Length: 93
Image (cartoon, rainbow, N blue to C red):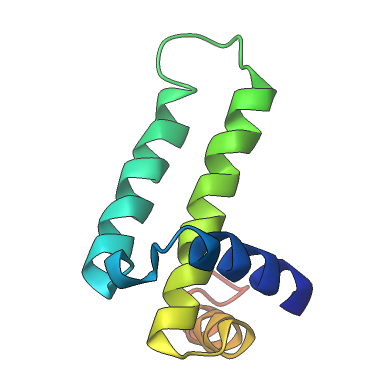
């Protein structure tokens, strides 16, 4: 995962985009890219998975940049959320 993060941050930094990557702007970008991902499935069942993969990558890239800007540990927050969800949605339900 660190190699991926390093590549993303290098790409961002080489273009001087870091000042624009505030939590607010990244949250907006995640939402916009998620909508573009949803658009891939909007009108028909014939899915262009190349396009889906590109939009999914955009969502993930922005999410990982948010992790960096907020200084949180992605693995930790995911595991914590899974634990919370396990209590909310037990297997028995």
